[in-house]
Amino acid sequence: MSLAHRIIPCLDTDGARVVKGVNFVGLRDAGDPVALATRYNAEGADELVVLDIAASRDRRPTFLETIRRAACELAIPLTAGGGIRTLDDARSVIRAGADKVTVNTAAVARPALISELSREFGAQAVVLAIDAKRVNDHWDVMVRGGRDSAHRDALVWAQQGVELGAGEILLTSVDRDGTQLGFDITLTSAISRAVWVPVIASGGAKLPEHFAQVFSEGAADAALAASIFHDNVQSIRELKHYLSALNIEVRLPC
Amino acid sequence: MNVMLIDYGAGNVTSVERALARLGARSQRSHSPECIARAEALLLPGVGHYAALIRSLDQRALRAPLLDALQRGIPFLGICLGLQALYETSEEAPELSGLDLLPGSVRSLPATVKLPHMGWNQLKLTRPSRLLEGVSADAYFYFAHSFAATNVNSEAVALSNHGVDFAAVIEKQNIFAVQFHPEKSGAAGAQLLQNFLRLAA
Image (cartoon, rainbow over all chains, first blue to last red):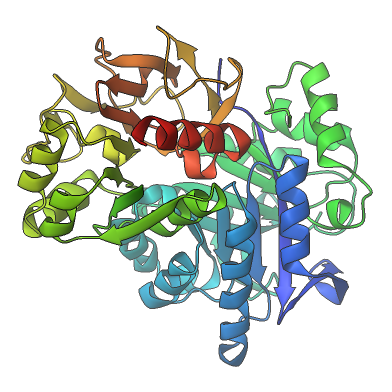
């Protein structure tokens, strides 16, 4: 008996629709968020992440409505993020039904935000999202949807974030995101071994082997993917049976 | 029957409400001593910091009516912090007194494992459980916590393990409690909530 490795579908939303892109650009429509949430809940997803990629003030009510409607359908944890800049922003998504919030750019700009959220909602509700890009011998933290470098070492930032009260790291490889070449194992393993909180690996997943590798070699606690699930390239149910056959502990859907 | 959700400001009250609604149960949230005193069944959800729960119970004068209701045999289900609150104290806020319905104190999980203990884990049944009736022995439940009742006492009908064994399901007469989140634990969690509703009816 031990903690199961989690498989987490991610919905990147823009307004009332799910969108997808390669390397954070070239977005196209991928469906209705609530319909996808319902499907993943039934297929055995362990958690769902919903991100507001536009994160503009005027579309905020639409995003909150999406969270509210998705939460009604889910019997699994729901994480919401994108544009969380203040305690009030976080409160509004949690009131809408999210169990956890992710913070990214705003936490880089003002790290105390992590502590404020952790004190208010508990560390288990605060997910530090880090978009990391390889630069020479280290990884840089990228902000504003992976576009700009924060000129900060991702490994050091992950450790600081945990010290400040983050209960989990959502680690996206900007280099791998959208490429379907597999997770960045070196990055995931480096971060996962440097912090004492769970790490969710993201960016680059396509094949079941990619998931097996990120759990066994990458020391990831969870793995996140978007388009391969939306497009039915990979079914969550089959993926879990594949991992289970390799003796990687997963929660098999009934 | 109407389940009274003790609303002390925790984040997961809405989730619990929705999970009960999916089962067709009626529930109502309240933080008034009078409502708790009149409740037919009580549910204490909780997530976050132990101190926030205990302080809120005391500030809203809910401790006495809650203890009184439990004494009278009103069915009770504690979730996560709602389980931890049943013990004497917690290492998370040693200066505060818990509800003291179970002996011992809640402790931090060991630093040898990743914390919080976050995700899906299984249970080890130590004796027959009324809450887990009809739930498969290898079912997974969703946990999100760093502290736990590791001084496992006889009221624990099921344990889980993360670095160390801890109480995952408590059953003591009318008092039921779970360390995991049944409202977030898929079909197995729904079955457990359904069992509580049946036991409380």
